[in-house]
Image (cartoon, rainbow, N blue to C red):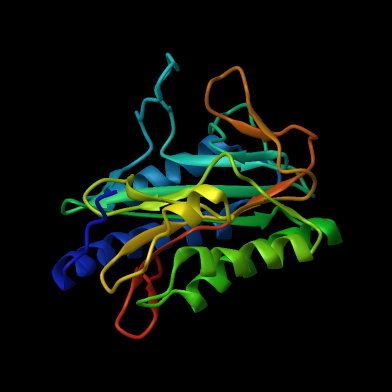
Length: 259
């Protein structure tokens, strides 16, 4: 497993890409409202990226065994959709929905990736608790990441918090290293497994990770819809997703996907 240590120059370039990602997600959260389609949000994301001379990462991505390339710049996943929801004119946001938006760009050769989940209008107390808990799981990672710390130690605290709140951690999809490519080594799970303990990741200064907990209100089981992309919970209960691109620093960590 070849993990690339990023130089200060490279970290600076990822940080600049991260500012654009953060700007897009803030704008989409600001304008999303009942009656709006997810395709409209996608067009706004494309426009901001174009104005910033950035390439969107998801548009046109191909997946093994899937005929259709991903058709959007954003992943827009509603309620029981975990990740990879396809933006569409036919998908209209409604009061009480929770919406996860995942977005990434490449700028000057370097990538950044982030995701946020938020409510459309008023949401149920349980869905608000789900979103708050998922954000807290990501905040735990940010707080615990530091040189010399093993990823199993970090993720153990993340998983303990999520499950202690009565939720489950998705195990079929994980985070990843990021830099010149959107997906680099290592794979970054949100749960402790025998595989992770056998081949643990020891964090070092300069490692950049896209950490992205996906937390379900019900069971952790998921499935992929017939479109080949959209992942949903098998029990149809809601899911939340938060993600930041994070670099390990000399003393801890720094989030690179902020304005």
